[in-house]
Length: 199
Image (cartoon, rainbow, N blue to C red; front, side, top):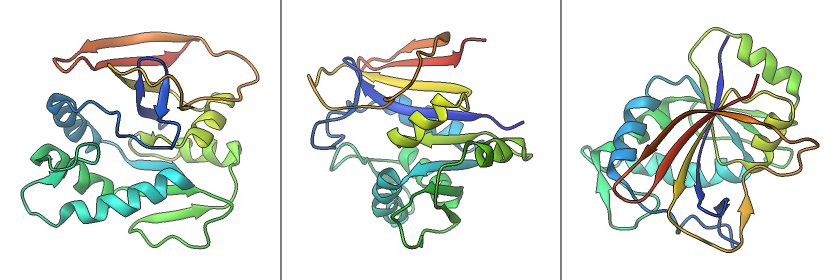
């Protein structure tokens, strides 16, 4: 059975976007880019909510214009081959976006599902293939969490306090205990935490 892995950057005080919806608080870390580029190539698909899908679609197709490097979405002016490796995978991966308001999807290898249905996601997990990733997409990530459909959470916790913003997971009807799988620190002050739902 395929797993769903939530991969997200959050601040030390628990927000994944600033109050105005921006990600300019992210502290870059080349080693994270390298590991992400290497690890994502083995994943099978990406799940999105509408806002994250539109943000990715506006950036990642253009990230392949240079044959050697790609721009850092969080740090204007910075480019790296590691980010280009991510761009190749993101553009080629099968993508599913859940949205009631999008009229159509034009990004390569993307399908549109009009409404979130946990039974449909369960059926997707039963299909053969590598794991699925979900980036951001707080509303969908929250619904997946509520229905016990996320198998692993990978948080990159940045050394930043925003004091306000949007939480990744919200609106749960019950708390969800997690088991720590791995903790890793980086020179930039970022910390990677891997969790699985407690069984």
